[in-house]
Image (cartoon, rainbow, N blue to C red; front, side, top):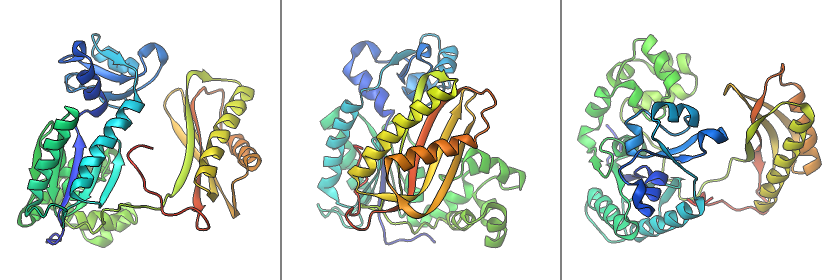
Length: 359
């Protein structure tokens, strides 16, 4: 049985970026809208309104594909400074009830309200108050999932969207998971779900009937996670503070990069941005990773791990260019480049970092 002692809420704003744009502009209301670069700028959809989603449009979809699905789709440039300001308001609401808040994105967070500041008896009451306050402050709706762990709360928040709330009680947890289609499991992506289907795992009950050994053998270490969530168990805590695992920078280009000289220039610029972020966090790291996305959306990464930590701009540029040399370009065009530093060592000066809603 799932852990009965904790009360976890997952708050997820409804079509956040798109809803902000519709809130602030009357002519956008009730119409299919996408926040992101227009098809002429060769970008992707950052967020889609619920009217747009009816056409099959979703985030990360290429803008050209989105406009093909809905010729009347309205494209709006993102206003991240506005979204961050609204996130700050939402965060203030959370803090009225608990300090144990784990931001996941600008529009999403976990809250541990096992003990809440207002002494409310039920987590569902806390969630309802939070949703009401968010609407009063921002005129935007939020959906909530309430349960005994993060896994269940996350799934619950998506079950009654938009502007809804779902509660999964402890005594309902295992039966709920058993009936859940495998694609609905948070943490199981499309590729893994397809593999599970091939193995005869169609729902939570099928997953529950597989042994831990079978799942680890089939899926690696994450098989332990699958074994537990099939039993509605998730012992992960809501982390108000987390240690940063990596620092990165990337750039998506309006026009594909073709010649080597231009690619290296862009790589140097990205390295400079990365260096600023490393310095801001007073960090260094042992693993450098180069990310390359081609014009056909194929994406590859190449990494190198060093014996000692690095944070020098010259070293980052040199190593990034060397990693680029082992990428088989074969005349391919590049639409995105990124560099990240992981295996960080920030123990001397950098403290545990609050992964805020605003970064």
